[in-house]
Image 1: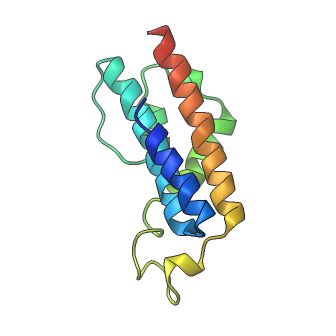
Image 2: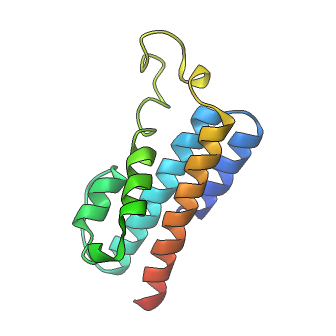
Length: 122
């Protein structure tokens, strides 16, 4: 499934203390997992927001509030992890921690498992 490799890279990033990159890759992994599910259902979507992908998903009742909350936190890592001027002072690498990497990786894993479950039923 799309997203697995990115999640592996997020784990390597965390181990190397590239926490901003690990957080970004976690978001991208969850996004790719959803887009794989959309493709399998032959549905079109244009968005990078996991929340939007959930809200537009044909079977959105498959996602509980916990996943919605995880998606919101993952989406918060999409832009500020990548741009040097995202914060008034300091670079993105200064703003992310191992604990954040672990949390976002676990959220992405949860979403990947849910999407894989949906794909196995289609």
